[in-house]
Amino acid sequence: MRLDKLLEKAKVGSRGEVKKLLRSRQVRVDGHVATKANLNVDSHLQQITVSGRVVQIESESYLMLHKPAGVLSAVRDKKYQTVIDLIAPKDRKDGLYPIGRLDRDTEGLLLLTTNGPLGFRMLHPRHHVEKTYYVEVNGWLGEDAPHFFEKGVSFSDGTLCQPAQLELLEVGQSKSSAHLTIREGKFHQVKKMFLAYGVKVTYLKRIRFGPFWLDDKLAVGAYRKLTNEECDLLKDYLD
Image 1 (tube, rainbow, N blue to C red):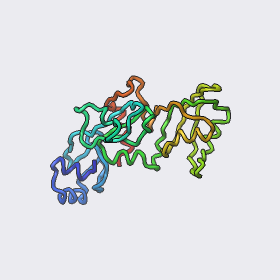
Image 2: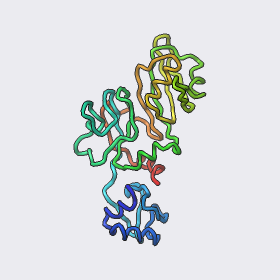
Image 3: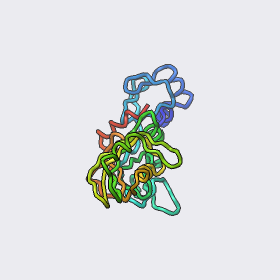
């Protein structure tokens, strides 16, 4: 949440009064003077003080979901079930949305939050958030495959992907599996990258998003709140 909106919600003062407090350097976030009204903050992850007094409001929501195939990474849709539909009413707070997206037929790790600017910052290129997928394909992945992905895959339309890391797991004539790590998220990127190599993705599951790994105890379609340790990792994306 924006710092100025949080201070208004905490009834520290009106919008004008909040601006004056910021200009007079009376607001601190984790001990540092804060003067930017649009600073993205969370009073449960950071200590926010005004003239030495701690300010706190209701915590933002941070959830980890094991997204099933067939479900849209969207807030609402007239035709398909969305990830928000999987969240129990008691946890479905206003403004809850998925950070980034997974294709409808892809399963795996998806983070959801009510912290509006957080997703934008986590997906911003300057953070270089890596995503790791478990991939199964319908053919052979040769010894040249890691180098093929590492040099940057080019699509038929001229699109060039950033270098990616491919770790071969099992290799066979009719089925192979691997872990693929990328730093971007072009439309159907993973599937197109393997097609460029000459095989088709038959199963795709995201197991990592930045510092977050899919909880292997989470059943498909299940979710949980982020742990305190996981929430601490979010501080790198608050500024």
